[in-house]
Length: 387
Ligand code: MG
Figure: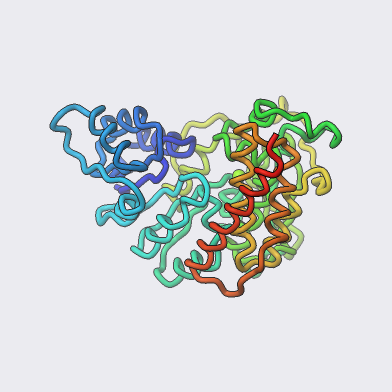
């Protein structure tokens, strides 16, 4: 029986993880659940899965949660960064699911690794911001980082039984997002609801916007670079609109392995939860004759400058990926709040990156400082552009 702590239990990855736990109650138990908001859903999850501990954003939310639970219900309700640390390091937990959104996921994931917990990682920002630190700490503590991101799960699966030195390149597939066919001159008119309607995957708001700008793929390039210890020049991105192939690994003998499936995160989540075993999930398989041709295109970096910016950040490394990530979070939120237009997102990120003085070999404090600096710089840039 594996004991789990889920950081981000009410988001899309958290809810799918709990569906798997519910399907295999003999294999998994829930020890801690953490959620930022969605307190009503968290209260339901608590009553169903009976964790020892629940963590919310602040004292107010803790009181709200306590009011929603039956009187005398036995659970520790904690809040804030200390609460997250407790959920990430709880003694009875063997696997921490890092499913929080954005930069907030970094410290709890580092805490979990430091405490010797294996991590099933959906939060790509953790590796984008501090990939060198996180992978070094994991190696030091002999901890596994199991990818939940579908592309990285695909690569991880293709690598099983193969030698790292035989890998020629990694090929990340990308659906292309909802604006693949939209002419660039129409980008200024893109609305929030246009950008939220992803053609293949059903995801949270932040990642849906990142998918529309292709920043999501840029973040995934950096994530793959750290997770699989491979140079950026050996990571290709290819547009594959059908989203049947979730990513590929090319080997030196010319062989290319692809992992395929329907676009449903449960396969990747279950593989991370049960690795190296596979669970009988009873998922549908791709309907190949109905899908028809699987097609591939080169991404248009001029139309989607976020992907180019992420490649630059990956090449320079140090504090630049954290700066890029923070500026992206601010710009995406400003777009969702309808303060800026779609085309302002890459402009704000680039502007923030251009202003940053890169620090070499940064520690955690310096990375967090760079993140905070970038948020201020990007906010100022948003205010200058606000509609
Ligand atoms: Mg992905």
